[in-house]
Amino acid sequence: MRPAVLLPEVSRQILPLAQSVAAILFALACAGAGTTAMAHTPEPINPGTSVVQTPLDEAGAQDDAAQTASGVPASQVAGVVGASALQATADANDFTTRQKALDARTAENNYLYAVKQHDCYSTFFVNHCLDKARDAKREVGAQIRKEQLALDDEQRLQHAQQRDQQAAIKSAQYASEAPQRAANEKASEESFAEKQRQNALSEAQRTAEAPQRAANQADYDRKQADYQKKLADAAARGVQDAKEREDKAERFAAKQRDAAEHQTEVQSRQKEAAVKQQQRAQQEAADQAHQEQLKQNNSSNSNRSKPGPDSNLGRRRQ
View 1 (cartoon, rainbow, N blue to C red):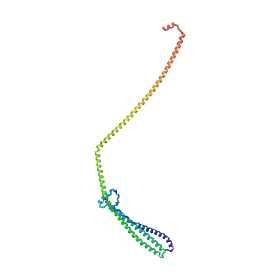
View 2: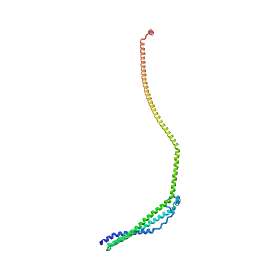
View 3: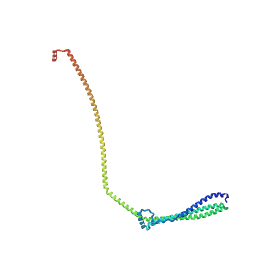
View 4: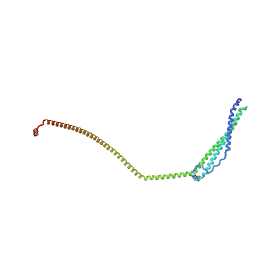
C-alpha cells in the first residue's frame, strides 16, 4: 500500500493528463460527428464520360472501333472507371470514419484508465483497484485491437480488390484501344513502305546520274588542274619578271654610276681646259705685253739713231 501523503501529489500529476485526454476525446467526437453529418451520397458519374483524353474529332471513331474489336463499348469502360473511382472514394471515407472511431475509443479507454487510476489512490485497496482498472483497460483494448485488425484486413482486401479492378480496367482500356493501335501501326507500315519506295527511287536516280556525275567530276578535276597550272605559270613568270626587274635595276644603277663618273670626268676636263685657257690667255697677254715693250724699245732706239736714207736703202738691199 502506498502512503497516504503521496495522494495529493499524484492527483496533481494525473489531473492535467486526464483533462488533456478528455479534450482530445471531445475534439475527436466532434470531428466524427461533423464528418458523419456532412457526408452525403455523391452523384453518379455519367457512363458516357471517358477517362482517356482524346481529340474530339477522334473520340467517336475510337469508341466505335473499340466496341467493334473488343465487344465492350468505350462508354461502358469509362462508366466502370468512374464507378470504381466513386466506390474507392466512398470506401476510403468509410475506413477513415471507422479508424477515427477506433482512435477515439482508444483515447477514451486510456482516459478512463487514468481516471480510475486516479480514483484508486483514494481507496483503501489501491493495488486491487489498480489491477481491476488495468484489466478493464486490457479487455477494452483487446476488443479495440480485434476490431483494428479486422479493419486492417478489410483495408488490405479493399486495396487488393482495387488493384484487381484497376488491372481489369487497364486491360479493357487496352483492348478498346487495340483498333487505334492497329490503325497507327498500319499507318506506320504504310509510311515506312512509302519511305522505302522513295529511297529506292532516289537510289535508282543516283545510279542513273552516276555517269554524268563522273563526267562532271572529271571536268572539274581538269579545270582544277588547268587552274593549278596557270597558278604555277604565273608564279614562274612572277619570278622571271622579278629577276628581270632586278637586272634592269642593276643596269640602270650601273648606267647612273657611269653617267656620274662621265659627268665628273667632263667637269674635270672642263676645269683643266679652263685652267689651260686661262694660262694661254695670261701667256698671250704676257707675250703681247712683251711685244709692246719690244716695240716701244725699238721705237725709242730708232728715234735715237735716226739713220739716213742711204743707210736704210743699204739695209734693205742686204
